[in-house]
Image (tube, rainbow over all chains, first blue to last red; front, side):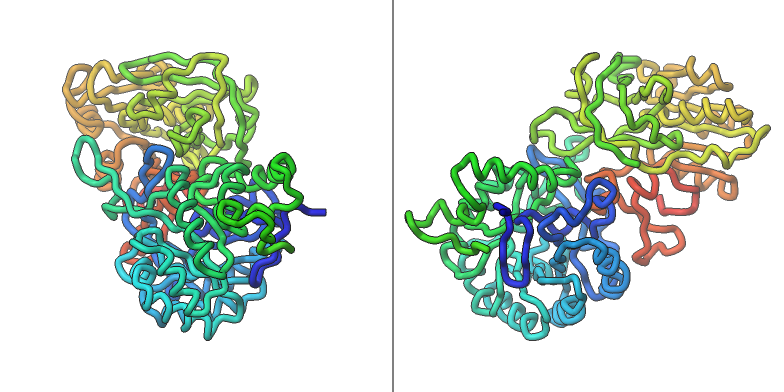
Length: 313
Length: 259
């Protein structure tokens, strides 16, 4: 019997480990290292209506135990994702979570409507939290009412459950979570990157051409844990947690905080095998901690003794 | 095929001021296809120095399963790397990218190999392979100053080698282009690796010549997944067409991408 299977809206996961959007492209590069069917799901790179080139380079800068990125939602556009990337991914037995982005409300609606009809797309991840684009992106994710209305509009047209990816760049993340719950979201993914900056020692200027970028990696893990801890208690939606996960131990910590599944992002760049390694190591760790199933870990940081696990398959 | 391997350090020595030559043993040496490919090295076992460091392969030996890299000790990562000694192990991803096309130079041709600073190393394996094929090689190597000069003798074994230093402390004073002008060098094709302004100058001055340039860009994953190291295609300068330096390059035909 599996210790790792998880049922979430739209998603029957053989395990709760998936690569995070933007850190895995559309899977092609990582398919040379392992069978993508091993993964719980794949969150594909953000898709917009039209193709986007993204920001000028340099687009990345290392920080202590982390990195800044300002890619700028580079992607081949809706038509190519539907005609090339998703059919290619269909050879694998793995549900796809399509990350949907845009500059205007209409863009999100257009992408959501079309991409949610692809047979292997089992859920959408509404990207209202990208810090690296001038219009849209994070602007939708920092004003509760705007986020609620956008979630509602996307829910109306989506053929699959809608998860909303929250930005940590807000004063009150619980307020944001409640707003998208009121908008009809089926789940939450959190956290996106934190806005940060690095300066060049010789020139005194920002290293990134975009000046600022999104901070990711192990450095942001404590922030993600705190926010998931707060949000998972305040709303009645499952949380897919992310933010600096690089080991099986990190996964358990995210579950304790309140996550029902997790995504691994930056760690894929460091170790292309990080997802299969974590999947392999989890059962022994879960058993060692005294659990029969990983779902028993969800919300352990705040649940009272005897409360049942939330999403036991 | 790209492999992730724990590689044993065979040797490491400082061959010029802050310039290190590092040789490791790796099974994936058998997978190296062209000179100018690179590897992605994880420095240390912790997460403080998070990202891997891309370093070009300067030479390899398939019978010994060894390859050599030459890098400049500059930031935290390369400083940490420079501390390592033979017998220690490194987590390396490789071989990555597409290198210089040796087949583009015909037997009897003269190939001009132009290197700038830490862009010089990948030209060494290229030079050996071109020479072995029967191509005449001429090297023009540019450095900041005399103490930074390396591999002049090694390059000298495969072909005429000219050195330029910016401060004039060794060889010709000035840039690589000053050497090409003053020596009135003639050639059939150019292979180059070095700072972007140098590559740009070569591309402009020798437009129409057969030329291959190795680009450098800050990288994330090194395998084409993160879209950190993209550049625009020259035939679509304001559009969305792109190439990834890590997986489509790092070597491009001149005129293929905007540099």
